[in-house]
Length: 115
Image (cartoon, rainbow, N blue to C red; front, side):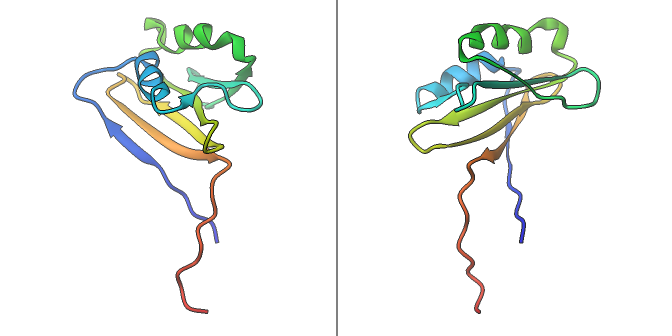
């Protein structure tokens, strides 16, 4: 059986990806997942994810927060190294709404249905 999950966040005003990532950093989250940094700017309706080295975090945040990209969905992967799990943080056009989709090393849930 397959399960999907996501958490939708709505902000009172537009936010930057950088501000949200900095807020999450205080709780142990980071852009640095095991293989590097993953990000996406959906300027062609293909949701083509890119990856780069961990030393490019500032450049990635500058790109996704660029005024040129405000009319596009953008995303970054975030990872919690202590929990060894993470996912995609997708920011919608206008940046007052984002979604978190756990996709990195998700935990399996035990079935609660009778056998």
